[in-house]
Image 1 (cartoon, rainbow, N blue to C red):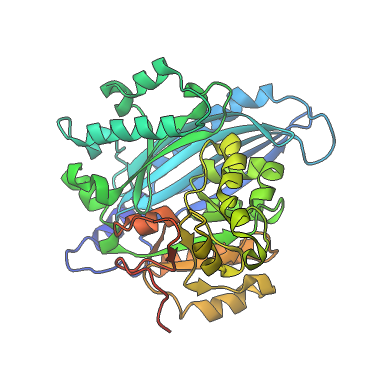
Image 2 (image 1 turned 45 degrees about the vertical axis):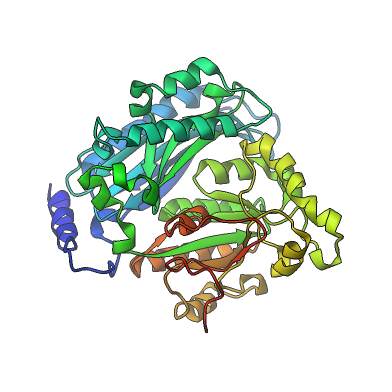
Length: 446
């Protein structure tokens, strides 16, 4: 009770019309994350993630949800066929995100893998007012007679049918999702600039175990929201924005560490993956996608495009599509060119929006976290895009330290999609973008 009262008092202090930006992370949004591994008799492994939030009631419900997955799925884990780290594994994680000054969303995911192949996934979402413990439902976001339901219905239809373009979704299941009852019962989470609906891919595409993510960006749906939901999604009033991005992966060790650390700090990011690494690290690409991060293109190889023919440059997008579709069902919506050589991509009409950056960590030089933080703290401004590399050994710690510092400095972390959607900027093919500050996307003045 004392925990809830203290959280309520501290959050209400920030609810003043005159505030421009939150100066620090609200106490009702603070979360401590831990995990514990258990090795079963047959050598299968269960990793259980645990959250300590501002409310004991929320902690108890999340713990109940995670334990149910452990108790039900853990005994069925099969024995691994080897003694390497390609084992039999159940990972029950809780990812969390915040919006406004009091709301938080939680996504409990139970992912079963065998020899790194994803063979099953279940999930449950919850959203709460972290000052009262009240659970927030979609009917609290959109009134019963709101046109927002039609917007959600169209978004679900368009997104589901866009996944796995060579396959046909199950019509009965899709139709059930599109009913009034089906929409109201969909799992959802709130993020920095989007409401995301979550659908099990296997329910409409049998045999698929990944997720279908249906994003609805706040500027597009706020007119249909209830007054309370509008207040809790007005993040541009409360926070500055930044996007963390990672190039050159995936990498077995370091990308895994980056993902774990982002999970701990409740941050989503954008991963610019090399196409020729997708198939060999399909489980990591799936994890990036299913944990709410954006998967983008870093070309098919890390070659110098200035030495490539126009024909080969134009072929990059098709090659990226071909490797991503079988793994996550969608392709990359934008690209970052190795070495930042975007003029060659534009001249060749490569056919993808080109994302640069406005804050360079130079982590590829092996700089320590302390050195990077010392150099970049004074560089941050609203709308920045940060360049890092998830293949580098020190980057996982740097990413976590930076995310924690940014949250304390009044920033909310966005994916690239969210960063541009917040200002209504539509990403166009063969156009370069460095940041997004109130719609300005050019190089940041020094």
